Length: 474
Image (cartoon, rainbow, N blue to C red; front, top):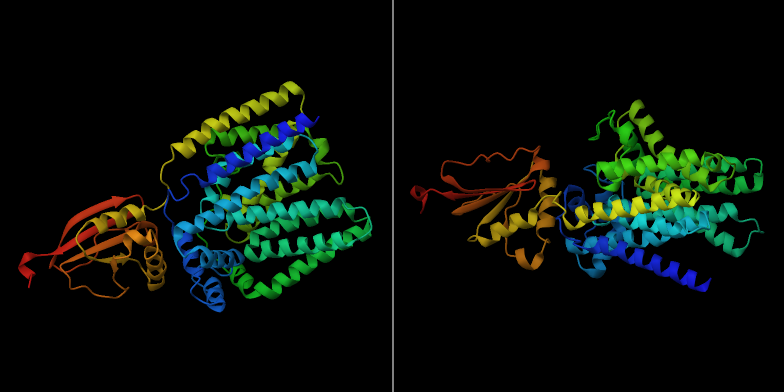
């Protein structure tokens, strides 16, 4: 028995380390994209608390979203240094510790070896890996959601008299849910799912009331802290997300979650098959599987309804916590199948996942703007001033703040023009980031004194060098 425990522990530790390796491997392979360098500007440690708050709540983009994470990031930069490359270490760490915590949640729900499969899928899930390598709050929201469910299930199963430990965990549950909700309004789906599950205990008034009080307190504090932001977000009638199409109802983002169409449909088919085979467990009153199923359905249902009533808001990363029920239902229900079926599913998942991750991780292609390559080209030329092509002064400010910090030792001598600053030098570089210019990086208006001598496109970025005609040299 002891050898078996040691063997399982060794397997679990190996899987967790492998998951961490995936998240830290080529951590800064890609440069920041728009959301990241915007968040980098918000979390500047050189400004005071109120200024950071003002930036986050500002109308340009933040409007209170990711507010808690931005402050965590601010003080992390203050500790380790305000450079873009450092931010990825925080999110990779957050993503890494989510794996053992999700495995613990799996064991908390079902005392089988399914936690090993949970850890394996979570470690290798491409969606979780990729957002662990992005300096935004998605991996943080996933972690907070796991902690919320761990404490929620503990409190649900607690049958003893209320003790000091219960009160501490009860307060922690309140705090975790408040942090999650303040940080992102979509976390409300997690809390709502838990509330719907507590209706099972409506006949146990004492337990039901204990949770009801917690939910009311979380909602009340959220309104007190974030009402202006909430009002602003709910009054928005335009958003960049398009309405879901028919393909969504076939895939439910699974190809995005698991790295490819083949992997996505494979996991979707396995999950549907296992849910149908174990439907009695799901619809059994007070079953933790029912809780997971409620979160699974709610994660899609409520954003879809809001999209039909007002504006589309459903996109895969906004409901990253839906991976909790997906991974847990697949893992736990796999271990409830007959041996042959269970072994077949495990082997199928392991082999296909390893194959897919080899392509996604070791043969990966760039998906974000190649700013570093652009700046390397500019820095290799003779000294020249750089003009960033942006439509607004605030866009210019965000991007310039990032450029002055990216690979600081390599590019600290680059000379960027201010937003409205004119140039009288012999040469002038233009750098254009396609997405913030509506994918139009045509040559800028420049007088006849200049000729274009270099025009180079990188992924999502264009750089061009203009030089004065000899006729106009002084």
